[in-house]
Picture: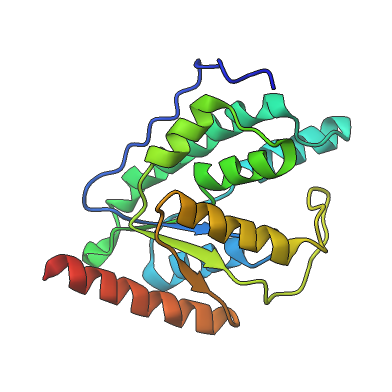
Length: 202
């Protein structure tokens, strides 16, 4: 697969030490964006949208074309640029609640690259594996499928979710599964963050 030598893209993660970052990963249409929005509203802090959706929706609207191998590194760069920008904004939140909820990460992009192409640009893989998040969530497949221009795997969500779990485990990335309705998911997250802060202040 061509493209592994591409090194022009800046995928360096810049996170202020006081910002607690949460990555929300999972199969398509499992409530990742909704959860990030709900958590940002609950805590009064920023959240990072999935840049890939913006990028690919624009591509679809202009050309009726979907993601290709050549799109992966530009998407990765856009995602990290957005994440780094919003990490700085998270410092401005009140009451020392410096949280940043990330709707996807480069790890998810890496997983999908390997799922669809059987390969991943080396630059992207290296960045995905060194990037750090204080908590990683994997959304359960317990929400209805909602079709759109970009989603294409309504019948593979359980298989893809299992692949995510396998890859997180294989790369020593501890994660928490999160499911239930919107309110239940937020309540679970509040408890997880309380436990995280308690353990790190002990």
